[in-house]
Length: 175
Image: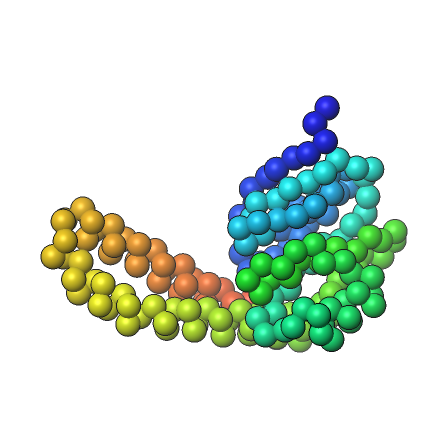
């Protein structure tokens, strides 16, 4: 029997619950997350006893991991699984009451605002480059120019959808 398993799981920053629930379900089946890669989409599990483990994802783009944030989390018995590009993946074993790192709606809104700020900065930084590249794209071979247009269309479409989804999620949380 194989004691290790690798999975790919695509999730979105404005909707972490399916990802967190998937990891918790895997732990209940005896597959404990050891590490993750590629923005927490490539997951590495190890076979163990089925357990109740809560997983939570947080985005902190300006926090020093060795600082107060980490101490607060560890004081509450959360263990850091991995940190990738500002995304922190935490786990905590439990018996009865399912824990969460977000104790109120305001903390979720604040996380979404951090993500929103990051998405706007990334999208804005790409605009000048896109203008330069796209203005020259038609001088290239027709297929390459078309691919460049498609790439930027997908990029700005995804960024626009991300920004829209974060704003929508915050409105829902605010009630």
